Amino acid sequence: GDIAATIDVIPAEGMDPEALAADIAASVPGVKVISPREAEKQISQFSLIFNAILLGIGFIALVVGGLSIINTMVMSVSERTQEIGLKKALGAGTGSVLAEYLLESALIGFWGGLAGMLCGLGAVFFLNRATASSQITVFTITPTVVLGPVIFAVFLGTVAGLFPAYRAARLKPVEALKED
Image (cartoon, rainbow, N blue to C red; front, side):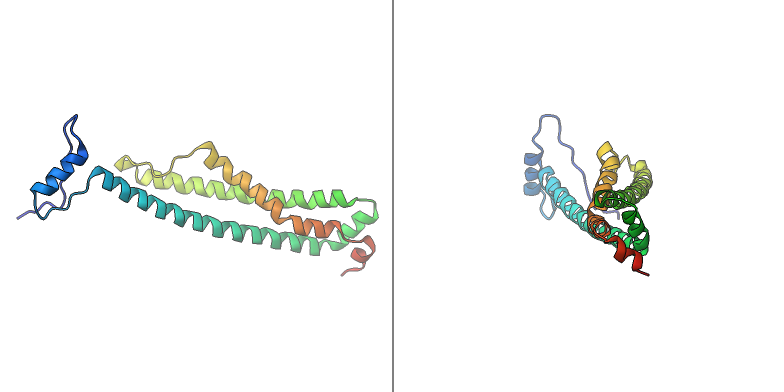
């Protein structure tokens, strides 16, 4: 016949759930009993593993994003070397050229962060919607979750653009205008 795979036991009000689990384990041989404390420990371990995986994925995304911005900015500077030389020959200071390229890299970071945040919100929406029938919310959307990635992407874009912007700002007008 039918065999029960699991049985959930809910303690009466005022009863110690840990003591109830110990009583069941002692009185029913061959039954695996998971107390609330053990269940909480298992969930906590799963949560740690899940967070470590998400953190690893996030770190890889940061490295790839930073390298992409650096590559984009290095190419931007090398393609506009003559333009930079002309600006400097017409009196643009090192600071203004540096600020221009840092602003450009910050904007690349902003738009990338905004696109990533919107994709993430879409994924969270669909994941939460898929688990809504079980009355489970997998991810909670908070202002930090919405604004944090965009702010961090702007910071990452600015930091990734430091070397190319500094390189552009240090170009000598005569050498930059000669370059093909």
